Length: 336
Image 1 (spheres, rainbow, N blue to C red):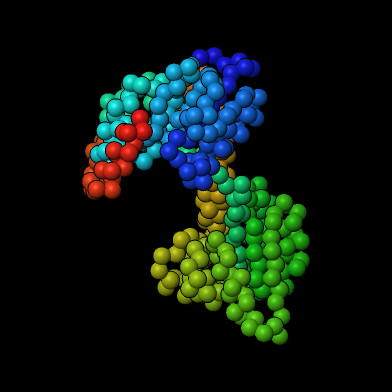
Image 2: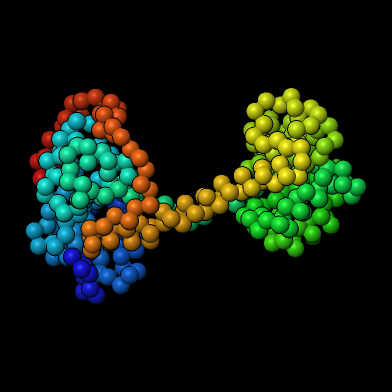
């Protein structure tokens, strides 16, 4: 159906606790629809008031609203034979089935659903904060450049992706150095603890434990701070030098600036991918996808993963039939 300014929507949460995560997603969808200027109501089926589109998010209790122009079902967690039988019985009763992943879409298609009515969108994220990437060093700064400190300055000068990182310096004498970093839009912390601070070494180790990666650029035989980071399970980005060579399973090692640059690019690209992922799977983008389904019957899904034999895999992992699950299936059928 084509939408207009008077198109209205209803999100049905039959048989579902609104406090459950699907209820929270329903609230996000409602906000996303309303932000586009449409009327959207939300509640149990008996609160339906003739809206044009009815989205049934409690699929196991869903019954088509006869006066709705579109009846769509959100499908999630088919994990036993009873639920499989129930969802299969619904295949011809609704206009569309929106699954919580592309693989779930494949599952319904293999089960025998009309492919033109089945859509798969990964669930929207609900996070409103993404932790920055923290990369740090546990060492003093030396003005003679013995630890190749210039490499990081060179990297930040030539790679704008450094703005995605919070660099952490744990040790004395980094004052002038971090001032140079600030010229390249870098974020940083400098923890300059006095030797007179009680438990100073333990305090610095605790700071070290908050890092995502530990880096060391010196070709001077190795750094004891590397052992501290390794003990805390912090991934290492270190020179392939001295006693560093004896540490097993080093994540990134290098001997030259070029290899150091490649290592940082590899790490920071993962953070960039994370930001892109959260942007692509925002509630607003999700709402845009399901609205496109309801209006045009199109699937602009960006996942398009390859999936085969999903039905076989799911059935192999079904819960075994139990009295509790059997009674649950009876309850859902009686509701209908």
